[in-house]
Length: 129
Image 1: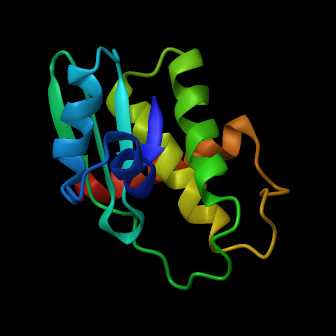
Image 2: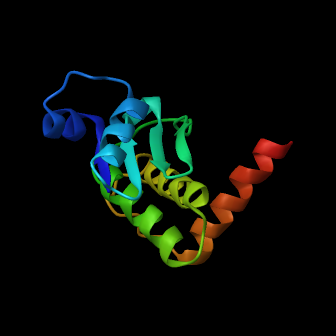
């Protein structure tokens, strides 16, 4: 299940603002994998092994946020469908969304499997160095 913070708050009729707590609420509801996006504050996600928080990927300039949620979801789904673990799948979603908001198009016209995988490798290499 992938929801943004506002959608989660509306569903649970709560004013809770902590994305990790909202993720836990989804898990308590019986969802196996839960993701709560929180815009510039990153994403919380969890499953039976725990709940995690990943900061937003810093971008140079937000050109247009249209399509960011869809881009995030497609990256996560792509990752899971291609045997990535949950952490890497969420990262793929974040990378796809961050590139989308830097574009004038709501769907990245240059997006390919190879490009997304390359962006993941570059991101991971930056974390190591």
